[in-house]
Image 1 (cartoon, rainbow, N blue to C red):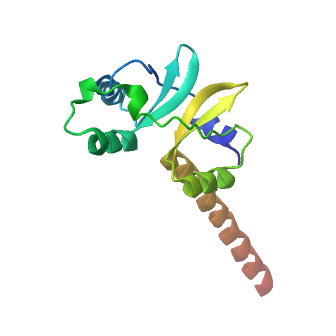
Image 2 (image 1 turned 30 degrees about the vertical axis):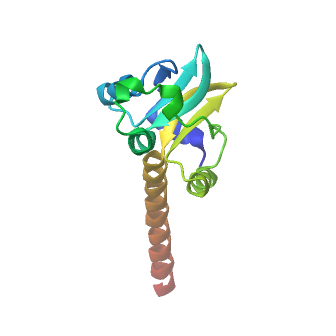
Length: 149
C-alpha cells in the first residue's frame, strides 16, 4: 500500500503559518484548528514544521519567557522530512520511527499537499492487516473444508 491510498481516504489539508508570528499565535492556531502540526512558511516557501513536541521543547528551552515573546522561527523544527504519494506505507512508518518524528508532510510536484501523522499511518495499516487476516482465515477454512471432502 502507498501513501496515495491514505490521501485518497483522508483528503488533503495543510495548515500553514507565517514564520514571523509568535509561538503564542501558533499555539492558538493549533488549538483553533484542532491540529497537532503546522507547516511554517516564509511567503509561499515552507521553511519548517511546528508540532506539539515543539511546544513542549519551547516551554523547557525558553522558560520563564512568555510564548508571546518567542518568535515561531526560534521554536519550529527547520528540517523537513517528507514523503511522496508513491512511497510505501511500511517504508514511511519505518522512516518516521528511525527519525523520531510523528508528523510527515507529503510533497507532490514540489509542493506540500498534506501532512500525515503516525496515527494516520498506523490506523490505515492495521485496517489493511485486519482485512488480510480475515481473507487468510477464510482461505484456511476453505482448505480445511476441502480436505474433508
